[in-house]
Length: 156
Figure 1: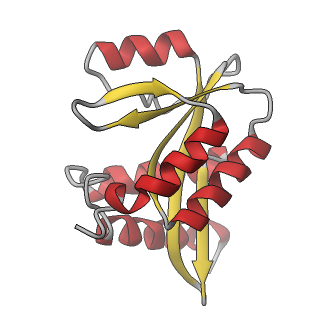
Figure 2 (figure 1 turned 60 degrees about the vertical axis):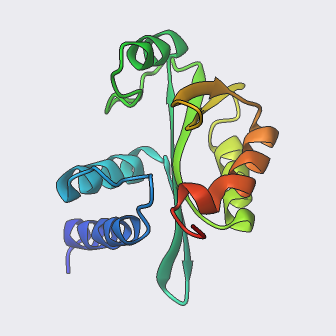
């Protein structure tokens, strides 16, 4: 198997995991879009992945962006995600977390190391309505630790 085939095989494994544990995270996404999303984040460093006995057991996605652009798109009802990583990013958006509490905390620590200069972090709150909220990395780590099962659609 060549490197591209190996990369796509691994991305497909993550897609299968995401679709199996979809809950509210990827429920309306076509498989092809999830594959592109996984590959984009794998290439740009925003895919956080944990394996156990060779199997994917947890994932999270994050990306740096410009606050003004991300906020404007969200307020206009568009996706906050743009399929680009701007060179002049000033914040980080953490979304689509499917992990247990311990692993979510590890992912947040990895993200802090990945993007140490980005001090403003954002995530989504789903209740009462979908909102984009700023939160410190430490609080975000605790937030995802507490709500991961809900976000992953488990424990309902």
